[in-house]
Amino acid sequence: MVKLAGDYLRLSAEDVYEGITRAKVELGRELLILGHHYQGDEVIRFADYRGDSLELCRAAAAATHAKYVVFCGVDFMAESAAMLCGSAQEVFLPAETARCPMAAMADVADARKAWEHLTSVWCGDVVPVTYQNSSAELKAFCGRHGGVVCTSSNARAVMEWGLTEKGHVLFFADEHLGRNSALGVGVSGEDIAVWNPERRDPPEGLGGYKVVVWNGYCHVHTFFTVDQVARAREMYPQASVIVHPECPAEVVASADGNGSTSFIVKAVEDAPTGSTLVIGTEVKLVSRLAREHPEKTVVPLAHSACDAMSQVTQYKLLYTLEGVLEGRMENIVQVPEEIAGSANRALERMLEVT
Ligand code: SF4
Image (cartoon, rainbow, N blue to C red):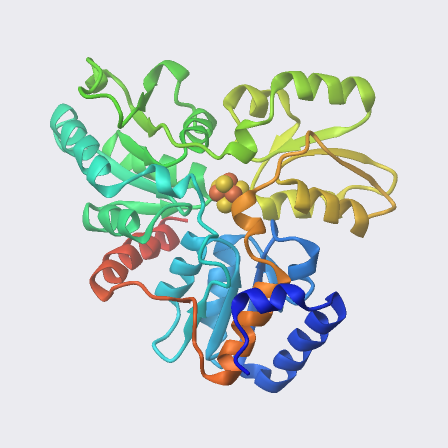
């Protein structure tokens, strides 16, 4: 009898574990399971690679033996992997509802309006930069206009390059990463403006700014506050507070360090035994780091979880893998060629720049 997606929810945890393990053995080197750091333990335990979005996309492209790449993450990550993978590889996202809300905040039609206004006030001297957490269409838009993609690891370097090239940067889609990167390369807060696509008319005087940041945000990281940092310092006076650069600038300024998820993982790994770290990022990663490093105290700055990441469950992973075995190929992620071509130009430019 054909099993439907809902039938999988009735399976016991042992059946799911056995089913995924069996599928992995049967598919062998033809299968690659990628797990983003923000995935829950029930899923990430099956991942062949764990990492941040760029690391995982690179792993997918490098694993040319893998015909089936199952990306346990969110939509924009699987899209990027699909663009970087070869034509003999298929990329799957086990949950079609795993959509990053921040990536959805920057729509290409709105982006075009901002671009037209700012190229006019800056006389064409502007580089569009988009965070990796954006749609393939927006990456393609940036690629077509001499722009570039960045990640949370290299956003500062990309910002610096854009300012050196043209003197101005239009940054999509995360206001906070854009502002933190600009401040980090010496741009004054007074030279940074925010673009709100819901405003009918652009604000006056944008020509006097150096950087305009889109007003998108990640709710997981804007949840963190300066008060939480102050309370953590009272509770753990010896602790290092480390946050993600998608946090608001005042939170980043009040922390001891900030960086991408890979930076945070390494900071915990490299901390001496007995040290205490308070981490401001997605709580599933922080909890895992605490379990994996019992010789250190690792605590979350606050409990902040990403629902989009939690859409991928072990049941949906099993459903996807059994689909591959049965020839029922569901949840394949594909990007039209003309979009992938332009988006890849923006990704390649990032690799050249950084
Ligand atoms: Fe999007 Fe934030 Fe979730 Fe990452 S953590 S997928 S940026 S909502």
